[in-house]
Length: 176
Image (tube, rainbow, N blue to C red; front, top):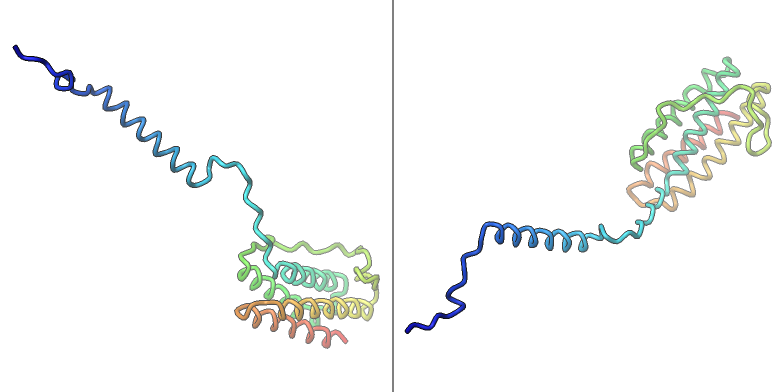
């Protein structure tokens, strides 16, 4: 008489058993992957820090807009202010490229009925000498901001920032 061994009498796995096992293995792998890459953790990532040159970019755009407004209010100053405005726009473009920041599609011209400058100086709608004085003060503040940024900038950025500071100093002298 032959004694049957229960282990030897096992049936072969059915197709359903194989598919079920494969699905469970895939699910286990997916859960392991999701847990490993923190998709199941819902803690928000901290916002990236703004680039340290972002204020310098904003300043270049502001100075360009100020010059554009002054040209619109005083067309007789266009020959003097046009190249300065173009320089500020070029600086803004280069800073945007360097920082990976997008520029506005166009910097809107400020209306001619402007409030006084932040320092309380004359409005651009004033006489041309007052406009030049206002722009000169804005250029000096911009130069100081650029010089501070240059001192804090890493070496690969210091050349550009130093050039911007020097240009703003030259602009202030031209406006004298």
